[in-house]
Length: 74
Image (tube, rainbow, N blue to C red; front, side, top):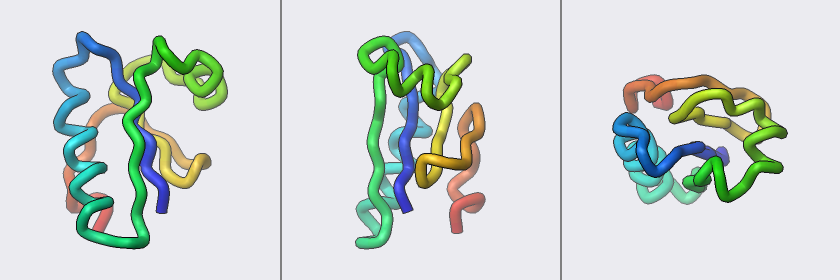
């Protein structure tokens, strides 16, 4: 499972989303996570149609906006 979290520097909701993704990655060898600063990687921002942050992409296919509780991933 690969989790990508798109963020901006001014987003107050992004740090908890990134923290959750990294926590899951630390707990399982089958999970990896990346934090992606949207302005620094416009090609990825366009590829995943990031219109707001945080935006979470799972396995480069499924995406959702906003932060979800950790239980959504278990």
